[in-house]
Every structure is written in C-alpha cells, then in structure tokens.
Image 1: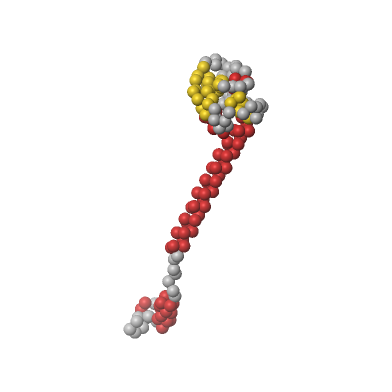
Image 2: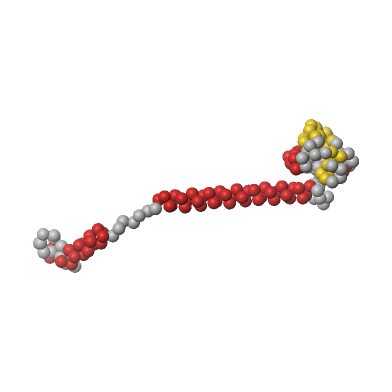
Length: 167
C-alpha cells in the first residue's frame, strides 16, 4: 500500500486497488440477501421445550407420589415394617376388618395423615379423633386404637373412630 502523501489526487482519493476493493465490497453488500430470522418458529420451539419440560416434571411428580402411596400401602400391611412405636394395646385394637376378613387394615403406629389416607383407600369414613395418654410406650400423634376394631367387621362406607397417643 502507498503512504498517504503518495496518493494520487483523483476524484475518489483511492489507489486503483483500493477503489476496486471498495467497489467489490459494495457490490457484495448490495447483492447479498439479509439474513432472515424466523421469530415465530423460535417462539414455538421455545414453548414446545417449556411445555415438554413441565409435562416431564409433572409426570415425575405423579410417579413419585404413586410410588410413595404404593410403598405406604405395602408397608402398612406388613408385620416386619411396623413402626417401632407400637402401642400397649393388642393388635386387635388397631385392626379393622372390612367385609368379613377379606380386607384387613392395620393402623398401629400410623400418624393421623397416613391413617386418613388408609381410611380413604379402604372406602371408610373418619369419625371422631380422640387422644389418650400412652406414657412412654407410644409415639405422640400415632394411632393407639380404632373403633370398631376386630374381631368386629365393618362394611364399606362405615365410620371409624381413631384414638391417638397424646404423649
């Protein structure tokens, strides 16, 4: 390239190479199409990703909730998984037999929320909730006894009264 002092004094003020380069760049800039941005497509894609993520999260929560309910239902009927806070009452005082002995529900050691869920699952209604002092043998807030309890049987839709340990 030439120095500034050596430029020819033509009307553009550029050397022939510089003038040709500027003309080529202008021709390229004027001939190239401006890039288009598909904003509608981008918005749709973003919404689709968001909806998919929300649906996946909701499905995971439903599965986790179902797994928790299944684990609770399975552990409620098993003798090995009974909570350590067993009450002084006999097992019959915390067991409800629905329609004869076809459905046996064990409430010993459950807190009130789990007891309500088990009643709803068994299609039974919650009656009165009382409290009794269990001393050191029971966990506060856990089911101490149910009424009516086995060997009596109840039908679907019956009302069950719960007695909880007070402390």
